[in-house]
Image (cartoon, rainbow, N blue to C red; front, side, top):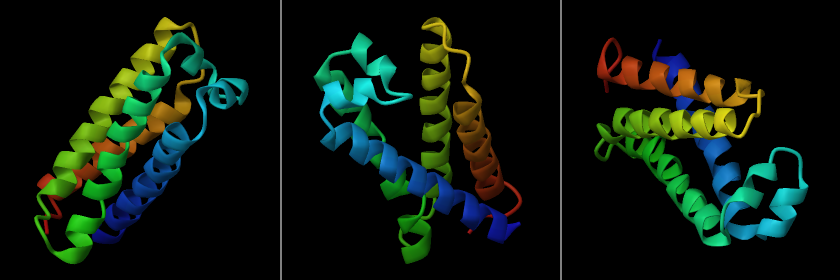
Length: 124
């Protein structure tokens, strides 16, 4: 169980590292042109950068606290934050009429699993 939770935390950290840096450093026009980035056309560049900044928080909160042994309670709290963020992403996609919410649902499920595991059966 502990290994599965570590792998889940690492996977979510990697996903959010790529996602956040893309939103922060790729211009909005280029994001809107790639597959999966069409949603950025509905929002301002500042909003897209803000989402990117929010997505940095899981990168900092999911893996480093546990690996360094500093405030490991942040891991399940960050996982809860990821679940809330994915709820917003799913809602936004459904409101826009997009039907491919599977990746967001998977990230949501992984975040819930991580939060449950670290708060329940396998705390640090």
